[in-house]
Length: 244
Image (cartoon, rainbow, N blue to C red):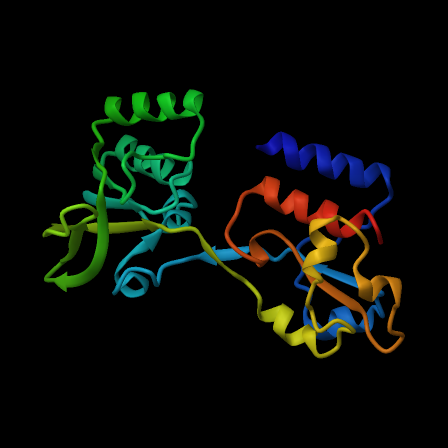
């Protein structure tokens, strides 16, 4: 994955794009630049609210993989994305010494991962002693003493079961970081909205063909719109930017 960002960065340097690192872009900072177009790629933050009690009693995969939260002794990893993150954090925890149960509501783990990588995930997870349980949806979390009780519901039989863990890790994608979008919308000539028809045809946005001198055109791409992959963000960027 790093090859994608490295190549994009090298291309930007070649094209003399200016970068500012280690700083935030607040509303006044952006407006002060008097831009013609503003594109937000602010990404998202972990979605923790889909499971009742998740935002108080669970950690995100980001918390664990970043080292911000230490691995627990007996850990539930609940994966709703079917991507790389769930198996990755489960393997990380298991190799750190945790007893891990990896649960997904899907019929198998990492169902959206390609065949080659899927086999490697399974090899590593089984070798690390991770227990895999498909077809269960995590419904709620409750504090029970020093542990957290997880209540599951089978996707097919609707039967419920509960189990206690020392630590809960939820991987459910992200929610857009769109605060800056909302703050800038009133200053934007298009209110931050894109014309879907033009976007799908990869043609110029109407607000760019007839620019408003009293505001800038405002767009957002990638996880700032919804939780998706890097390829979707690149497609967003190409559709919007090739006609600037």
